[in-house]
Amino acid sequence: MNKNPIVIQLIDSLNSGGAEMMAVNIANGLAEKGVVSHICTTRLEGDLKSKIVNSVGYLFLNKKSALDFSAIKKLYNYIKLHNIQIIHAHSSSYFTAFLIKILIPTIKIVWQDHYGNSENLKNRNKFPLNGISKNFNSIISVNLVLKEWAKTYLKCKEVYFIPNFASFGTITSKITFLKGEENKKIVCLANLRPQKDHITLLKSFLIVHKKHLDWTLHIVGIDLKDKYSEKIKLYIKDNKLSNHVFLYGSCSDTRFILEQATIGVLSSKSEGLPVALLEYGLSKLPVVVTNVGECGKVVTNTVNGLVIEPNNKNELAKGVLKLIENSNLGIKYGKNLYNEIQLNYSKENYIKQLLSIYKSE
Image 1 (cartoon, helix red, strand yellow):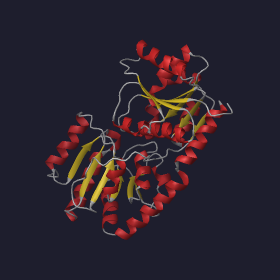
Image 2 (cartoon, one colour):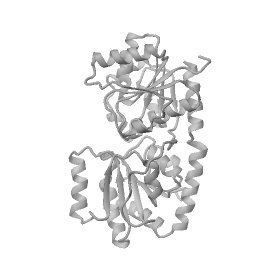
Image 3 (tube, helix red, strand yellow):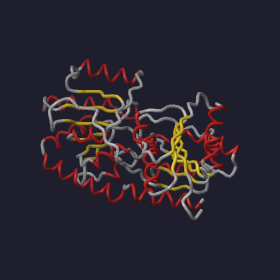
């Protein structure tokens, strides 16, 4: 393909999350470059729908099961109507793309692997992905570990690594007002899932709180209201942190939230390349992050942030305290991280590489 192809991003939901945010960012970024760009969410809509720009075509399937034939037919008709040539499938949506490939053999599939538990890849279920992967034209991995895993176990010859990018876009809103004192707010953008290890974060904040009573912690991300969520809430209650730790659920106004924040943290046990970290950088926040996934490649310890080992409440608290007690250092780290994001994790670089992959199909 010499000219720009017509592409649809395929994602299972538009709830706030790294893969979902990337699908929206890519759809918007392609449209900005004059590409005829579409996005389809298969199962659920969500907060991120509001971030899709008007020039991007939009489809919601409301798919109820893996073999929901009415939903598949709806997508088939949409692809035919708009002469779509490439399905860029994200995460588990590859199965829906595969079903369309059966119906339209000429369609190209680019699959993007956002698997967040890359520290525990040996336990990753390969079925049915390994069989279906022979139908992919190319695979994009969000970190080098995932790239090697794909080359080893999957049946697609073209495997690429392109680091994620972050973009706040042109749509701005001011909905979520963080509680607590100004310039004393620690933020964590992470859905309430065990791999994000909020419990270690809370334990570290308890240490910080004893030294700095006026600082607050703000956790933004989807609350699945499961046992893990209950554990977080119980810890906050039992340690009398209800007036100092705040849960906001899923929010769409990320830029505004980060404008109010003073420090950004990620306490994850495992990651791919978290979009949240890139968003911290775009906001010039000083950060403390765990050395998982690509985090240690984005953040160079004591140069543009602090990198610690996972599951270590004392080291996390020590890092946060260092930033609290030396605001000039925090400003320096924030500026350096912003420069790193602009240089190596920009939307422009990403879209350029992506279009090259599309056109090689």
